[in-house]
Image (cartoon, rainbow, N blue to C red; front, side, top):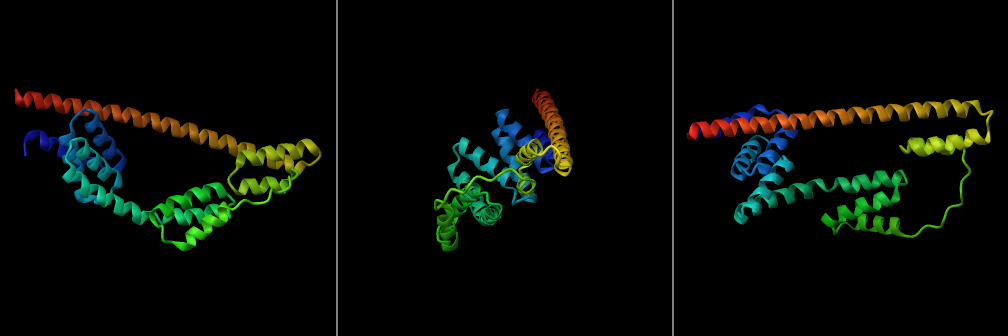
Length: 226
């Protein structure tokens, strides 16, 4: 192992979180260093053999290099892992069905059945959900309807219904109070999303630090060679 290999190994060892390792490997690919990316992937997979993202980068890099014989076994391992995990789509479909989110449940079942075509139960459920339903009569806006939307996670719809209720019944103080509560929840959610945006910006800055780190490593390599 040369000095530069040792430096890269040290970097991979020091990065503790899976996301940062993934960022480093993506940078190596972007920087046009596929051999380094492959070595780093293999080193990470020694400790984390079930990391789908890392194995995916390894298979992709092999394929881009034209190393079909190395890419194929990695892709086989990935397909096996994905097949094993695909049963969650059936479970998700059941959850969505209970929440009456039929279109999403259908999409989830289709993904599941792409991996498990022989599952007759899932096939029957897909057929049942895909059957056309009679159009339901329109429902007048009520606080009960608003709460149903809220329990299904449809905060915007719940607020709209409560606004209609309050507009139709200005003296309904209970609905007015609940409307204000939901609006406060919406504002809190918007603040949370804004905070996530700040965290994303920090991550981008971290990527910049990693890129500068790699540039420094390259400079050290040139110094070693010269």
